[in-house]
Image 1 (cartoon, rainbow, N blue to C red):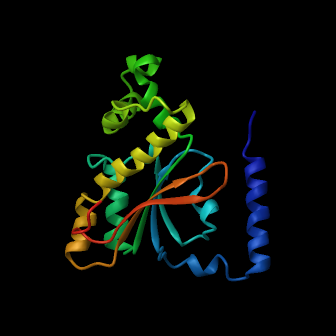
Image 2 (cartoon, helix red, strand yellow):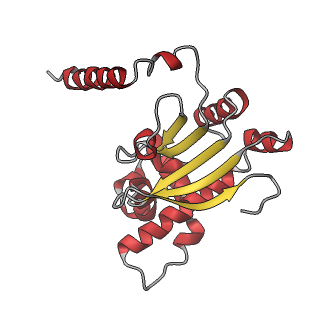
Length: 208
């Protein structure tokens, strides 16, 4: 039988190290949170927001899903976005994709994989993602290899999802009320561990 013992042991070790280095490390977050940023990222286990940004508990409010998608009819996503902006009053939103994204790869190959014949939540989400990338899929570059094409589509996906994000009601309402809110679109490189900024917008009038 598998148990949580390995995870629990690592948790105890982590907590002890933090308390030894900073006795007030946990106490400072007990009474509430004031994160400076909302992170919208991919669920991929290789792209943990707090780890790759060096953030501590209380700094990031996080939403992750397959291929870092922005879906305005998804109550889960929209409730996180609304809460972050209206109640936590974050000053920054970071939408982050990553090279080598399995979700984008699935969208690229969807017509030729078994998922295409499924009636499932995953199939519907990947179909929606493929639709968002339709223009980029329709104009392949003959000079690209498979890795280069996937990387280009990853960046295209960030830009497509960013375009949806800046049109959502919570973001627009914040800007129209004069709120201090910057929205960024980034890509994470699994090979280097570096983030690359693709796009930024800080008001409704800015062009994307």
